[in-house]
Amino acid sequence: TPLSALPALAREIDDIHVEIWVAPVEGPEQFPTLIGSSYEHSFWLGLAREPNGYRPRCWINHRGPYQASVRIPARSWSCVRVSYDGTQLSFFVNGIPAGTAPANHGPLRRNPRGTLCIGADPQRTGSADYPFSGFLTDLRIWHHVPIPERILLPLADGSGAPAPVPLI
Image (tube, helix red, strand yellow):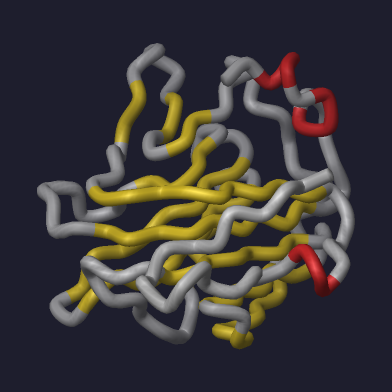
């Protein structure tokens, strides 16, 4: 997606809050991307593959990695959220705090390529690296702290799939 289609991300922003439902499956990638705008320049939210699942991790302005304190399982739906306000980074997994770290890196820089990718990270060569294997749904990006009613919406029917909800 070109960032020009998302005006709030086409410039430097003071804070960002990203939420996405994920169901990773085992794949060849050690660090699969959930959403990327180039870890080398701007923002990257992905996973680190570990023996017993995946650990959410994030890069901000080419600084990191920052990692959540908990793992998410493979082949099961989890809600991953990261919040960055210019001074600290916080992880949430299924609505539960999963780590906060000082991250005084200032406003989130714009990716010079102007690209935002879901399931891969755009690189300066024009390729998309660190591909995700599995299922992604219900990506939400805020440039302000989201209201509680918009965070971690309940599962639809107990099947493990996120509930469809209009964003108004």
